[in-house]
Image (cartoon, rainbow, N blue to C red; front, side):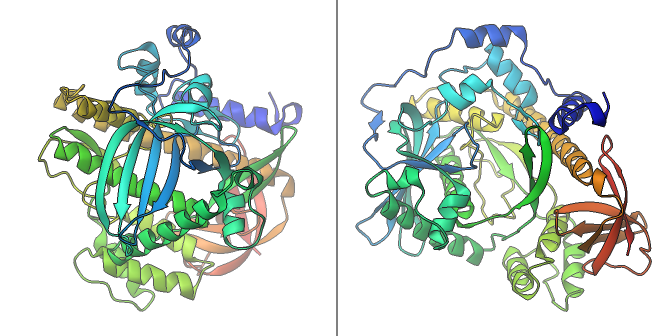
Length: 489
């Protein structure tokens, strides 16, 4: 199949499917999982004295415009001490995907949903993750609720978890909510249709700002990298748009960080093991110190998240154009996140980038297998039952999930590069403004601003260094390999 006789979406689907196979994933659901899916009905609504009925609250979801696998809802309320009570509801996935079922076996092999520009490879079938277990609007749903009380300066005073009934009153999207919060757009119609939802969103936004400020004061890193979002029109790739953070994205990120921390401590307090999400103290800290020195800044000889965050904040204000590239460099030097099993009373490494000791993944059980494992551990805690996993099984699962996450990132990166090459293949000879993102003996790389894509500078690269603004001419693309070559103009 050639590029001339295929739509762009078909081309990228072919590349994505091959990448899935190359990196050891199952792109299709096996027959026994499909048969199991046909027998499933909606998640049964839980009953019993321990189940909290919270369907009367002003719950909402905020996610991407096209998201259908809604994993979490949020709602807040003023507290007596001048603080805020925050509740995060997490979809009950385990009820329809029990351990060792055919659907669970497939989810355990892949461990994550993989999002490519042309196709989503769901961890669980779309009928599950986008319907039966999704916290869709205007439907009663079973969930696990994280109930947190913060004082006015963002300090967590108490937290509890419990099974609960919830109902999503408004399915909202990041960009439209952020535009309204910034005063650049109207209240989204789904929010305007619910009395009191505007005040609810304002309260959540204020709390998120307080939590974020508190985290940064303790050394949580504010890293802002650029991801490109594909825009199709009738199967043809029209553009790549920068998918940048905004107030609504920050809000959800802040709340999920809080919920994941509370979940880790809840399991620990009840003597259960867990799978922790960690970013170790960076082994390449000396290189980060050298990086800061290149900007005339001094960092301590020993790893210090607070000092690093202060440096990053200063650079973001000094040169916002290059800050995404600095962020990307720091991310690489920090090293990847990983999953580790934590025994009761154990001392697994914390999360350096978030400046927290206790952290797990729990808020996306439709999309990530570690979150589904955590949900099963929580249900054991609610029932005062034995853990559903032996500790050595959790250790093996943590290693496997880390390996598969790395492979999933490679699949997504390969297809994004092919999409960028596909978009630019008809623009050979065009000139672009950009910035140098890498310069070493291995090669020189530049990111152009419009569209936001990166390529190798194969001619005229002598003397260029990271951060240099540059004008380049596109000389070659290779869609199947995801290569883009520039010459200095």
